[in-house]
Length: 368
Image (cartoon, rainbow, N blue to C red; front, side, top):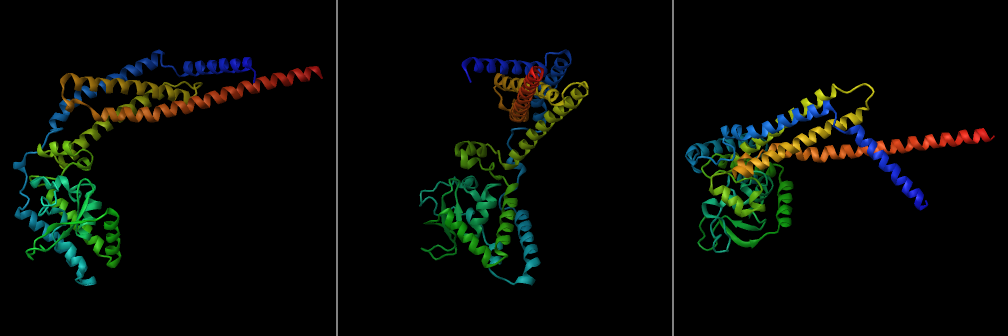
């Protein structure tokens, strides 16, 4: 192509882009009215959010006086009854093999003895923060593996072997040994244990589940999932302020509810806005307009909640659910609009080429 042809093509593309912008603009009275309504709904929600969230103690820690001691009799009895029930359900068919020991013996990641001698910081009574076996999510993997292999994995993924008898005194006391076990070796041992007896892995999972459940409602609780492996200092600060996994789960539900409410507002606006589409209007181009006004309204709402949190210097006023909804719009709507724009450009180019070819055909027909 010559330089002139390239310039003409560029000008032609600019015309098509302007045509697309004109067809999908929201400067008409109807779209602007819907934008105002959508913005009012979303902004009002973000401003009301702090007051509603406060009613549900959003961001607050728990009161230790409302929790049980870690060695409370009711916890031990419930733990033992659950183990007995699992044992009675399988012992008649399988017999008393190693899986019984796995089910009843103390979990290895509860041990702190000899940790100081090895230079390992386990935080004393806060040891649950430093062991992955106590993590509400990662514990299902690493805690179960620790139970099967008599190991303890810390929040930095460093793993040591556990001994169930003190080699110095000979007493039946569990200690952390200097033996380091790689994660690869530990999971290989897990595999060997699992194939050695089909009840070993289920027994370990059962023991892990019972242990997490028994720790969940104690005065120390369980740490916020995964956080200690990402930012130990922040996780330690939260844990010392009695903010645990149950508090996190409560706040996650509040954030989730806020996100759902934002989505409901979006659905109402989208469906109502769709009722005003004229029969001669392209459905995809009209949907672009709907998505544009939702994207703008949610962006304004998210900006308002950020400003509110900044002015009040209170992070609890930040409507995370609204922010998440805006992020989903940024990813989904922008991709959708780009796709529709690409189709529109290709369609217009194809139409204009067909028109030019038709004109050329007419010219040749007249010459003949």
